[in-house]
Structure formats: structure tokens, C-alpha cells
Image 1 (cartoon, rainbow, N blue to C red):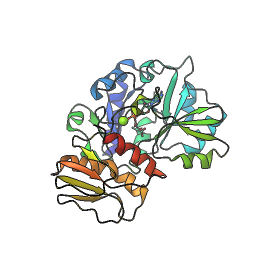
Image 2: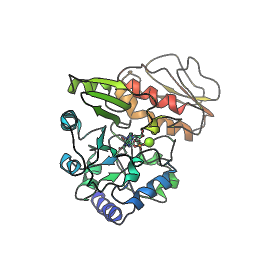
Image 3: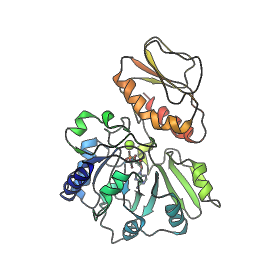
Length: 308
Ligand code: TXA
Ligand code: MG
């Protein structure tokens, strides 16, 4: 059944249409990255500001090398971490056909090779990269489960259904500068995971990077108000808890990981936000999450989601 769906999706993509597909991080809303019109459709349908660049997805490193020159460290990281949830900002070759619209006219483009099987099958044999932001309206919560996709999006866009995303947080976005690594967005691969691979490098978080405005503002927002790091729960709040404690909502209680496992919590986070946004509570309260490892990414996301 999925095989037919993937073939149909390829046909649509080749004719300039968009497709929603699962990845190991979050669902993507993809179109032909070489086709300016298709890329424009992505910005329009998501209501995304044109200055927020879009990641291009590839099937393998050979395809990436057609469009990009990689320096030593980039090539090393690529071989160690792809396929997987890391996005490298790479310099496009002059002859590259990738539309300048994906990167706000900059020659630096975000690239990644996903490891989800459906995503890889979709990319294979397409002969162009897929420009694909997360499949949600701009500023809204990313989606890890088919049922959480916004009905207004799946009404308009052909969608391939997958299992719940294995990781649940978006890719980590990095840019290599000589032997140093700039971290532009926390993600599913932690700074320590990167340093384990690139032992001789330094990694520096660039807060509010201008080239990555997706990270600047309020983001990942639910419709309902969110309070984070709560010590008590108000009567109208649903609770997203973590680990074992005495917090309790009178309306609804979800636990990201009762054993305090950050990987499990990462997988559950966006689905729980969608669930409470649809549920009976008026507001959402989130328990404190340890600020280490994947907790850095979880805290980054819920902090932005809680911004008014
Ligand atoms: O896991 C993911 O990365 C998912 C799946 C679908 O691959 N995609 C995703 O895309 O999260 P999006 O558009 O929601 O977020 C892309 C992030 C934004 O923060 C954007 O600013 C940054 O990557 N980005 C993309 N291209 C860039 C570029 N050329 N330079 C700097 N930042 C870039
Ligand atoms: Mg997004």
C-alpha cells in the first residue's frame, strides 16, 4: 500500500506539487528544491516568512556532492552522522540548480539525509533534492504523529502516513567554520553526540542567529497558553509531567517519561502538546525537565512554545 503511495508522491513531486511525508524527526512538507514555483508553494501554504530558509533533503552523500563542496570536517561529520537528524549548512556550488528561494538568496543551504525508510524511498530516484520544512503552519507545533497533522494542510497536500516519528525532535542544525562548529538549533543530536564524533572540534551555540530566523521568535506554539517549570498545577491546566513527583492536574495528566528517560520524553513531547491543545483543559502546565543532553532541546522547544 505504501509502495503505491510513494510512487504517487514521486509523480506529484516531479510535476511540481507538494507532499507531506514522515521522517525520524517530524513530518516534512516537501517539494522539488530545484523548482522555484514548488518552493514558493511551500512558503505560501505554511505562511512562512521568506527569510526563514528551508532544509534540503537528499538520498545520499553522492547526490549532495553534485550541489555542494564539503571541507574535511564537513565530510567527516556527514559520513559519521548521516543518514540521521543533523542538518549541515553547506556552501552551494555555482552550477547548483537548487532554487535560491530555499535559502533567502544565500549560497549557504541547510542539507540533511534522513534515516526514516519512507523518506529515503521517496528521495531515491527523484533526481532532485526535497526542500522540506516541518509540516505545520508557521510558528505552530511540529508533528510526529499522522493524527496530529493539521486538517487544513492534509486537505490540500498529498500525505504519506508513517508510524510515530522515532525521535520526535527536529534535526540539529550546525555550520562548520574551519575546525569549529556553530550550533544554530538544538535538535535530536546533542552537542555531546557531535563532540564524540568530532573530538578535536569546539562547538558553540549561536543564540538568535540571524541566518536561522526560525530560531528567533515565538515558535512551536500551541493555541493554549503554556507555563513551564511549574511547581504546582492550576485548576484549569492540563499537565505534561516528567519523572516521578507529586504534581497532578484535575483535568488530564500525561507523563513524557515516568522513568525520567529524556529519549522517551523527546519522542512524546510534540504529540502530548497536540493532545492537550485538543483536549479539555484551558491551559497547559509543563513540569521541569533536566537541562542536559536531549533536555537542552526539549527546554528550547517548550520555552519558545510558552512565549506569548
Ligand atoms: O528534522 C528536521 O529538520 C525537519 C524534517 C522535516 O527534516 N525539518 C525542519 O525544518 O525542522 P524547519 O523548516 O521547520 O526548520 C529548519 C530550521 C530553521 O530553524 C531554519 O532557520 C534553519 O533550519 N535553516 C534552514 N536552512 C538554513 C540555512 N541555509 N541557513 C541557516 N539556517 C537554516
Ligand atoms: Mg519548523
